[in-house]
Picture 1 (tube, rainbow, N blue to C red):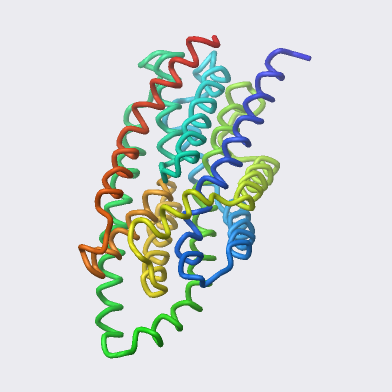
Picture 2 (picture 1 turned 90 degrees about the vertical axis):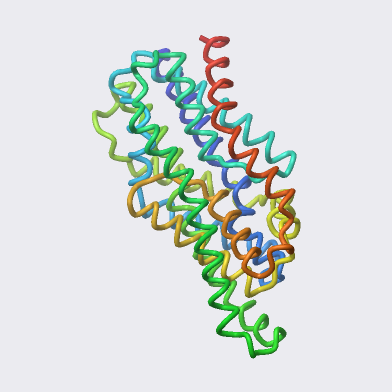
Length: 329
């Protein structure tokens, strides 16, 4: 078998592996609030999330084109496939480490940071599209701030509307509503996160001259959507525990506010073809909702550790990807 075919096969397997890990790593993001408030049983929530992730992944491709072309031009890289192997290995290692320790870090940050680091070391700084890279990083920074603000405002509005209702009655109603918002959350996750593996695979196909454009083939959509759905079906219980119980005690009305706030940010980014971190959007919306409920109710120490993990992800994974490239190639 031709060496280039073997290498592109390795890239595709690693990209789908990343998508699979992303599924169980980020499942918690979509369902943590609905599980912690008992709006949905864990297994039901996971299977629903898997189905909605699959659907969302099939219907959108704009983010994939951004991932595949904004950080570097695949057609100009002679060693693009090797760069992608280093990228995916670094992102997978980081995702597994943070999953193991129950840290809701960003798969998006891991992938973008790793790709930038691998391109920088493997192809040279002149091959890195700095403007495209910075644009993506800006979206990754702005989205959690926006999610925090929207979550805070939505929760304040809900508190004002339902101030005179009994908490029991309000939470009973919002527990049912959480089923809908968890589905929306899972769908938005699929529209953005699954696109990242699609973009990497399409990048590889262009690099290897299997196609001359960044349009995502149907088989790539199906493969990436399936990998993410399968990963989602396994769940991410450690991160669910962190997201759903340790940041602050979430009640159904809080879960509803957090879900709808995060989903609006994620889906809005999808519509303008920007990759954002679903982890950051959802965690930030939970923090915003908690702050609106009662500032002291939020575990700000834990929140600080999560933010530190966010900040260090891109530089650490960039260095890791560069080292992997040097060692392997």
